[in-house]
Image (tube, rainbow, N blue to C red; front, side, top):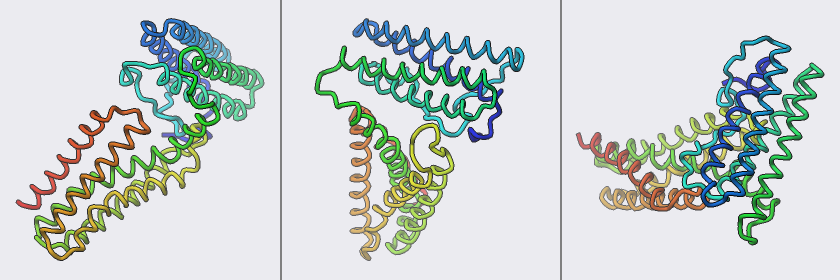
Amino acid sequence: MRNFDELSEKEILALAIGNEEEDGRIYADFAEGLRADYPASAKVFDAMAAEEGEHRRRLIELYRQRFGEHIPLIRRQDVRGFVQHRPVWQLRPLGIETTRRQAQLMEAETQRFYRRAAAHSTDASIRKLLGDLAEAEAAHERTAEGLVAANVPANVAHEEAEVQRRLFLLRVIQPGLVGLMDGSVSTLAPVFAAAFATGRSWEAFVVGLAASIGAGISMGFAEALSDNGSLTGRGAPWLRGGITGLMTTLGGVGHTLPFLIPHFFTATVLAIVVVVAELAAITWVRWRYMDTPPFSAALQIGFGGALVFATGILIGSS
């Protein structure tokens, strides 16, 4: 991945063209998914998709004037700073709240991108077009907000609270959940492998502590270096990295601490109870903040944890 500041004007325009094409297809998917239950909102997303197509046409026209016919394929996942959106087919059945949140996040991200791109450009025609597109994306964001009044209950939180919730989700919950999942699941195998291989609590504790701290350092650096937050609004990278690293370490230390108990059988049973509690906490967070159905979240986390747990026991007992 490359940093945004390293892109040339040619690459920025190519990235903008790819963004508009992808966003247009996403809005068309939203319209198709909402058409049966929310026909009025489907028409809004149809219009937004058409407007993204017009933005793409204007960008291509300017690109041809400046750089010729060949447009390199540069995607948002190739550049640090963009949110990785879940594919629309994974969000079905679509609800008006889900599409509204996604649309607001997409438009805020794209608007921020165009404003940074305009400031980055030295060509007057490119700066003007990118500035105009930033204003158009701001209008889209207001359009997405307008869907609330027509289609959702009156007790939906005010926009300011919604923005704060989204920022909290991006800056705290997501990195913390990633760390907790990695720490709780990935350290199961080494901890219980050491426990069943040696039959002694202290050895299992030492291995678990080393695995937890090592995983915390690794995950913290990985999160901090993956996204500088300049386009996504996800905040300072080292803060996110610190949250991820801390939660990774805590996730592993939780089921490591019981092995401070000298009696091996008691320590092992208590560690298993802690593992179940950790997986239940992860399931609750995914249901509460990530809109994952509770049964689905429990099944996914439980199955993954059971596989890693079984791997540790099998290796340790062999």
